[in-house]
Image (cartoon, rainbow, N blue to C red; front, side, top):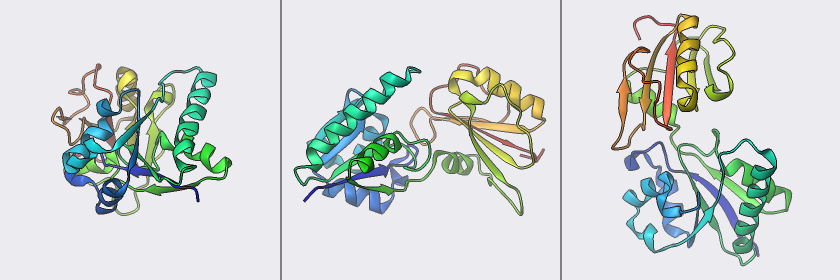
Length: 230
């Protein structure tokens, strides 16, 4: 009987924001998959370890997920990672894949999930608190009120576009193009704030668009709103 592969969201950074279900699954699993070449250096592993010290005694498998533009290289890496997970599933072992934030939002496990399901393996997603919800709470603001729509966009791919339409915007993946992202927000006339490394020791909060550094860290998240009092 084959095992099941679980994509488990560990939340945005604060270990206290891990769900009870995520903690239970991680504690019960023998095999933990972590994105990256060195599992113990992965942010998701470091978050979970704070809440689950016994994680250090489990069998860790590294799933290399290269951040490159070469689609063939990426596809090959995904297939290789899925094959590694399959080797454990075929033995009847469940595999828990740790992912930062939520398992349904720009999650690296999604690529592995498609391959595993294609090849007849069972998968299951376990939600975690999304980074933009945690960032909004850190900024002590709502994401939506009354009939406001919310737009979640990968800013790295959208800097040549406009923030058109009513409502509030969450701009993820903005770090490498923060200068362009800030310019896009400025042109829209929206008010913006940002949180970098939300919930981590290195957390930084920026209360205005002007404060946000152009060289912001990788885990940068910007919230832009129509409300001038934001």
